[in-house]
Length: 103
Image (tube, rainbow, N blue to C red):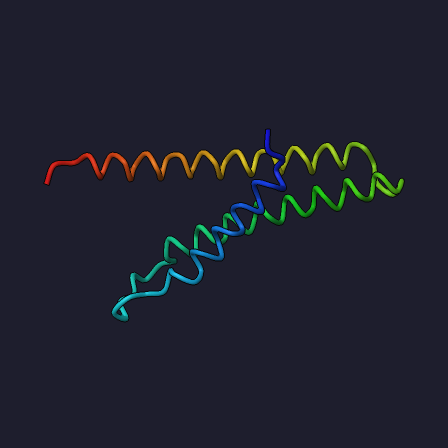
């Protein structure tokens, strides 16, 4: 099973790809945040949770953190990664549904 940090790093790589290819086309503005901006924010929050979890784990190993803080940080990271994976699965399912539609 992959750790939350590995998953967060994979989504960070995806964020960099989206960031370079997600520019507006034709000068059109929808008035709201673009999908790539929302995705980037979601990935960023998962990465932040992973970094917090890593920092708490390192602090505990040096005796500077409480076990409860570490468990809470790891649980928050797990929830964030699970949510992001669920959203990803739903986006893929929606894409596949669209591709199956007759023209």
